[in-house]
Length: 263
Image (cartoon, rainbow, N blue to C red; front, side, top):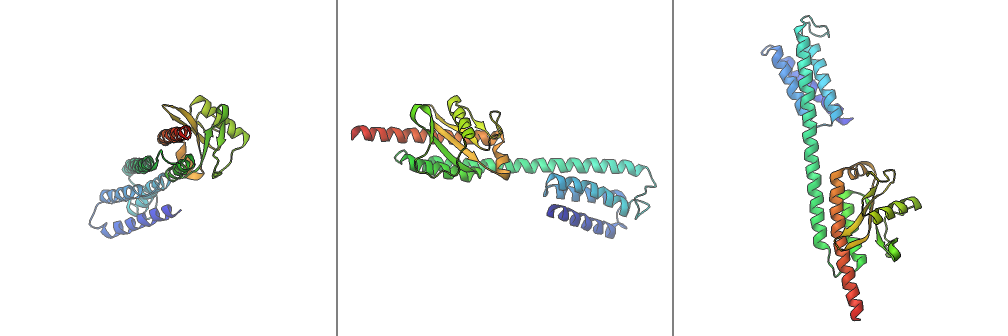
């Protein structure tokens, strides 16, 4: 709502400026002034408000500056072509500005997640216990993706089991447990936002490394975070997180087994 109010204020200011300078400029120059205002608005607001700015600019230009003024009637049909060109330019500028801003936001989000992945990989230490490693993994994944995180590890006969520390952010019902087991058995991401079991509330990513499978990383999010988890790029980065986590778990278990053998 605030974006629409800001657009209205911007175009009202543009109308006021155009009225003041009208004796010095032509009607075409005033049209360029409105196009500049639409471009400025599109670079700051979302698509809906940008489209609103495009149509409102045409209406204000017609009412205040096209003869006969202060009416929506048009005496010269050539102005209809001017309106069509203005509207096309305004909508094009709005769409390009919105896309450019979306690309910039995606780039910043990827940079943030890459930094989180780098921080996690440096914090993971094979000398840690499995419980400590899981704490590090869940903390960084939660910060990077804005979701609650659950780790299930491979248990007896390949069945998944929650971690022993009881620090799970949420619990799974029987149906979601079956989805998690499917993702683990097939070495494939599944759940919310994927082709496999998309109705699930949770996204499951196998903890897979070159040495085998170690468990499942489950993420459950709401709102915009849930929408981001449905994006292919986010899922690719998430699988990289899972790969790093699997390598750390492998080394931790290997060191624990070696220590047990020595004992």
